[in-house]
Length: 139
Image (cartoon, rainbow, N blue to C red):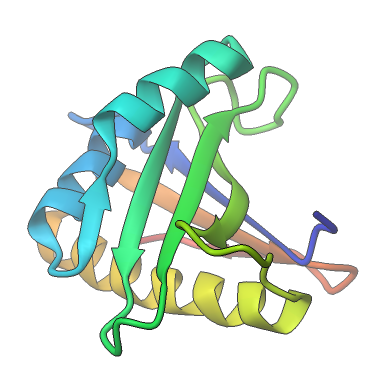
């Protein structure tokens, strides 16, 4: 998958939750978002590092969307940061195109920002788009 948007969730200095816990909490607290425990454990095993998968049930029921996150040992934000690495249809036969992935990422960011605003500052949300200037958004 070509990098269109880099999304990372990094712990704040005084965070009481890890980024993984923040994503799990987000999925449990947000309608139509789900933490896939078995798939997350499998994905983390494949990657050999902390990882998780969230599923979003699209309201019109046309398809489910899986978003996979994993840590990057060489990331400048540190080992604890989780990066959005894959966006794909849950059970579909075709992959999303670049525009669809971007729309899904924007939808996810909108929901995650609202959750972080409501729950407190346990993580910083970092968003960088393609070749454009990086934008740090703290949530």
